[in-house]
Amino acid sequence: MGYYSWTFGQAARDPYYIMVVIYIFFPYFSNTVVGDPVQGQTLIGYLNAAGGFILALTAPFLRAIADKNGRRKPWVAATVMIMSLGASCLWLILPGGEGLGVWPALALLLVISVAFATSEVFHNAMLPSVAPLDKVGTISGIAFAAGNVGGLLLMLFVLFAFSMPGTVEWSFLPGEPLFGIDQDVHEHDRIVGPIAGVWMFLFTLPVLMFTPDGTASGTPIVAAARQGVRDVLDTLRQLPHYANIAIYLLSRMFFIDGMVGVMTFGGVYASGTFNWDTTTLLIFGLCTSGSAMFGAWIGGLIDDRFGSITTLKIAIGVSSLVLITLVSIQPDSVLFVVPVGSHSVWSFPYFTTAAEIVYFGTNQVFAMFFVTGLSSSRTLMARIAPPEMATQFFGLFALSGTVTAFLAPLMVATATGWFQSQRIGFASLAVLMVLGAALLFMVREEPATVASIQPAS
Image (cartoon, rainbow, N blue to C red; front, side, top):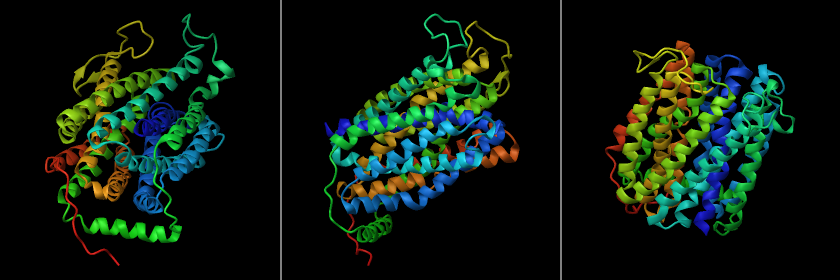
């Protein structure tokens, strides 16, 4: 029961990321609030870079402090409350920079971003203690699948309740958006924030109620902070003994940053390239979430059958090839040089051109291998870290996911702004995935032994 309730934490968080960051709100912010796709992608890149920089400085130390205090649930509860309230406030960000305004909106999104990643650190840290080692791949895959199911259900609701009514004459749709939602002022875009906030709060409750947590140590917070920082430094000093883990963490810094960047900017890039509206993005997101859910399930099974490192190599390799294919697509061509025309190829009102259909299909492949890669990267850490030091090494695992979290969005922002091209900015992410994949070939899937060292004084 404990490890199944743990999966609800992923189910609570991921719909926010799916609806707000990837498919609906960030494209709306870029194209409608900022009003310029190139400038919007640049600002979003710098926003994510700032969040990554803050997390690089704080996340692993907060994790170590929480470990010494003995409990992780209070940290999960606190960060989820921040995210839920912040997501609800996204309703106030109006078209053209009205309402909350562009810069206050960026500040709000930054706070949510930091809280999101911090919550993820504490939630991930619970996995080794609640799931048997031979089931971590399956449980991790189920968690990612549950997150995508939640995102899929909520996007279906937004699509049929708010986005499509009044735009197409289909008998199964309401005649107009429900609850008085006004599409003219993009309320169907803005509503995804409050919906995600409420969902996040409700689905975190099973984690807080049923997942086992550590016992409070009674250690004062200042003493816990000091010891936590010493433990982080001690673990870093031991890395020469744990060379295999160190190479893996270095590899992960790059490939995860690149893969997350592709997923983060994929909707922003598509909306700017093909001028997709909210309904098109919702359909795109729905299908992509379904593909990701399938990939999470299959990836978990493959992981337990063939091992995390083999699964991870496949996921990174395919994801790199998919990114190159995605940036090769323009409104009238694919694979950089193959002309396909910009005329409609069928009567369906969405994804009407050949280029859009190819982009749509290619992205489904990426979604499957992206979630497989996320899940396997987490289970590989559980397989190669000494069980006695799981908390310390998951602290470094968190560090590897945050210390360069600014790099991918910074690359996208800088390349997009420098070349004034969404295409070049998006393509720059391939560098990170190729570098991470090269390092991964030096990693062995075998558990490390505990080193004997003199603790730092």
